[in-house]
Length: 238
Image (cartoon, rainbow, N blue to C red; front, side, top):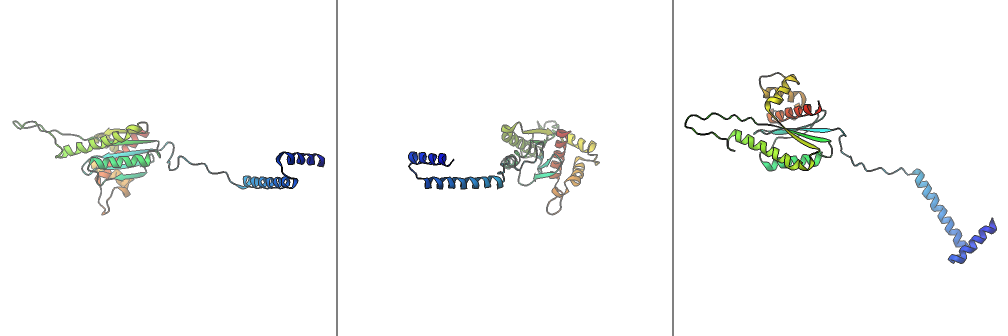
């Protein structure tokens, strides 16, 4: 064995031009590196894989957003467990603000939820019959009905424009006051003479910490938007 080893070393000396001591130093250095490598492999924990779903609520998680487009309107969002997520009720009287709100929702929640459902109340227009000689009555953006229609159109336009690239993960439905009022009465079993009364009872029962202002006053726009969001959850999860 020694003869064979010496012959091997002699060949290496001739080929690479290094002596036996240098060969031994190289071997010792290699063995030390091998020991250090083995030690690292045995003691080092495997690196954590990057979690691409960080911040995601869950695979089958949904966001339900109710919108009341009225003069004191608001936006209210809940998840599939009816947990409050976010709301807006100030400074949303123009199209620019509505676009900003929808954009923020998509930027912050689109990747966290499997689907975002929007539901907006559809205005009811009561066109009075003109008196004889009065001519045809019309609505303009200066009266109550015109403002309501304009606001609703701005919300719908903002949602369609910003969600057009995310059709598989977003959807919008318009709901009449009578429809979600019927839900509050028949499904939630809330009594009351009006939709506003039932809406407030639902809001007090489910979202009391999120529908009152800093001075303790009830914000009926938020209450109605919350009711629409709850109705939206109901029709999409039943």
